[in-house]
Length: 462
Image (cartoon, rainbow, N blue to C red; front, side, top):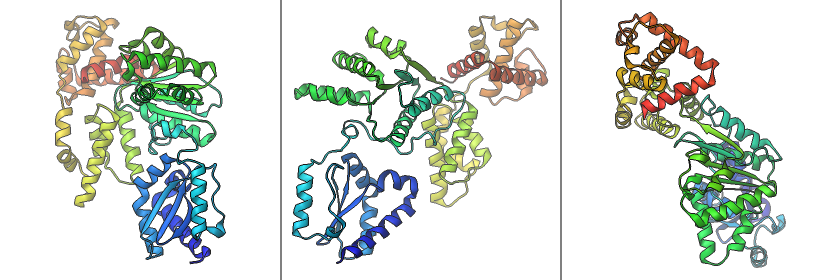
């Protein structure tokens, strides 16, 4: 078989892969593939890193084999191997391999061991291609963290050191971490970036101790341009790991390298963490990701549906945004279930089918919040008497908390406006409407007041 024919086949395979998976996925994962040889029914292809090889084999290997088989029925298998960029590929004329070609490629591979050209991809964790800035839905609860992450990703110099992101489970910390790493690699592929969990950092360190290879460990982690550690709370109580992390942190800061950390709590609230390390973690920019609001959840559902090219009725989106309030991960999972069910059974997405498919999830999320519970919590928060919720007093220090309680009763319960009014000393429904409007205006104008409302919502929903 001539090398021109092999190249024509390979170009057709590449074209089909690009058409089937889209330009973004092709550019990220499939474009680095290069053809090394075709011999005895076997296609041999190369990628520059082990991480890339593992990803391609796992996610695209079967389809690549199928497309090659369609081009040439004699092809029985496809091998994807690591050939670092430091090793030169054989010239075009030698692609149809003879014995000498095989020896040539083998010698090249032996001279450059099968490991990534950028060792950071090997010691770090894989990045999720879905987690980019383009796919991150921004709202009030996360806009500050998003802006800080974007600034760091777009800066060639250190902006804040460290950037510390914290918030509850499933609110977007890991998404932002991955987005920063992707953006840095896209802007400047020469910058070395390590992203990994704190648990994996600890595992690497313990392994280095066991095999008496701590010098190599230190060189790997202290020579990068950007170090990203996810869920740093997991090294709480691990004294030797904290000691190593502290020195790694100092070394990178001294060299002017960027550090990005995430955790479930603020630096000062991390349990089992040495005081000197807590102090270090909090010395840069600390950005909190708050619990999602109804508006943000609605935006996330809309963005996810658009990404999946599925029409989700407005009533269904509003229902999900109102009912699934715990975190973004659970919300996206619920939407995935609804869409998958509709596609598998061949039915439209309706409110009824959504309730049917998610009955178990809705039951666990449907904790009944009472108006009495809201009144009690708000009274405690603003330090007024519970009786003031029902009284005729109109002093501002009493009237404002009462309006907050009315607003939360409208947001967190299914009670009608007249029913809510009756619970507040027999007030008219127009009074409740005025209270809701006033609180919404105050939330928009005063970020501190908005945080107060969000805190009350979180306490009531937990």
